[in-house]
Amino acid sequence: MTRDEFNDFCKSLPHTTHVVQWGGADVWKIGGKVFAIGGWTKTDTLGITFKTSEIGYEVLKEQPGLRPAPYLASRGMKWIQHYDKPGLADDDLQGHIENSYNLVASGLTKKLQRELNIHQN
View 1: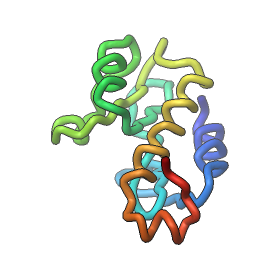
View 2: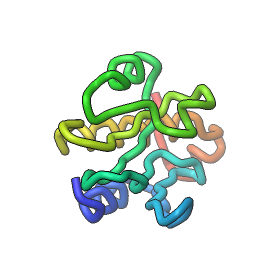
View 3: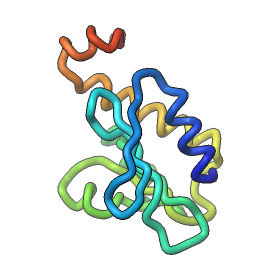
View 4: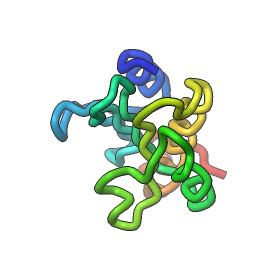
């Protein structure tokens, strides 16, 4: 996934906001909370960092091209970074980014969820 494809996908999710921070990374948020970060690798592969469930974290952290997200995972948070090949196929990566978006959205206050018209089950 290229940087443009990453940004276009994140932009397509409802109520997202984008900032460039932390050394030029593209940071995507819902309700002011980060759900995806694009940037920060020393390879040709765009580093994409996303939140995951505890089970997802355990499964993904050992796959080639994926790792616990630097900084975030070291603080006990369940974030994965796609940083090198083979990593994930673009469709799978988009699914994980969307899952991260949903995880973060579900953690917003009920009031903010109502304001953003987010319907969580």
